[in-house]
Image 1: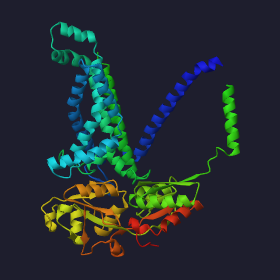
Image 2: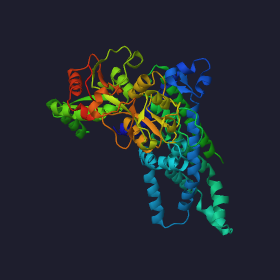
Image 3: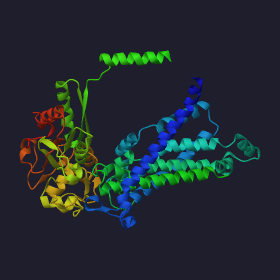
Image 4: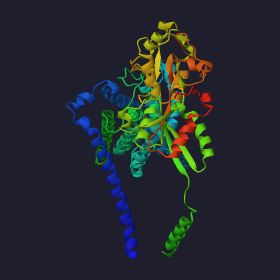
Length: 283
Length: 262
């Protein structure tokens, strides 16, 4: 009886891991099978990289969504990186314990806010601001980037803070003992030491930004042509899957295109994970 | 271990005595978002008359309604898109019409236009006229709002108003009827369309070819969708009962659903 009890944790964890692996592999297999009719066509890349999305007339160009995904993610990261790093640096400075604890708690709570809330807020505040400032409809890549930046900032701030905390205190003390100012210590010692973890944090934030759907959908406008600027409406891979998933039943060409879009996202995420691993493995 | 055995025996006894058995039956409805306000009220009435039954009502669009019901993932699909083999396979769905749901063309209050000819409306929706000044309005760029491809109202607009033409690909996509209304209310220069039997607030409801929509003359309004309730041939009696109940409530006009169509 006791042997059975002793082996239970190992068996339970092994079963859970095996189940997870089967589900993951099953998902990839389902996407590959669904996408295969399109991948197997002549010149699949030429068809998929076109700029025209008119699925009811057989045009499945994904370029507007690739551009939308890249621009929105880049905008969000450009806006959030300096802000998140600033928050993390402040938290890593000498602060009263209560202030630090309160601030980290607030950030932790903000990481748990559902994305639809950010989207709603974006609809009420960000879209009108973009409209008033730049004209047009307000629904735009810029609005999506702003909402994403605000969504990602709490997570990225906490990850940056953990990265800075990983630098041994003795290093900081040593730097101070050699006469370096706090800013010199930060720029020349702490940031370089924490660089692998900082880059890993950025890649995690990029993955979250690329994968976010609901909040982006609510403010981006859903336009399916190549955007002409940052203040133009647009769409990303994830928002277009959300918009059109109900019109293409399994087995149709349109459904195969959505499977291709999902596969592209998964491959992108995999590459980000590999990059993150590579940076952490740096000496 | 003894306590575990005791628990199993207790659960078995409770189950056989019927204490734990669940007698309620759950039905699901999926489809057109435009009919949701009416359906939610009517379903509550049907549930009150049929104790033990619960019904969940969700959106997803007309196309989703047809796909879900034909694949057996919903008991009733609500759709104003005509079924075709791509959507429903070889399932011969049965249906009942809820009635006529007017499709209104709405614009932001500041565009300075209240009446359009059908040709002007076509040019605006297709992106051929890009400023309200071209149709007698203020000097404001036109921002066309549309619905996703799965929307029944988009299909009807493209079929009935654009005569097979397409809404400009530069249109902004609103995922639901309510989102469309809110976007047009807030966006200067916006032009869109909603399924509604009442005159929506804070937007200009456009007359087309001199015909002005009013709930009292809803029968004469030329642009309308006909949302229908669809179910599979082998559906249970309770599903058919629910569909019949929903299709015959007298208060449908309060929700903008007029003149039942057979």
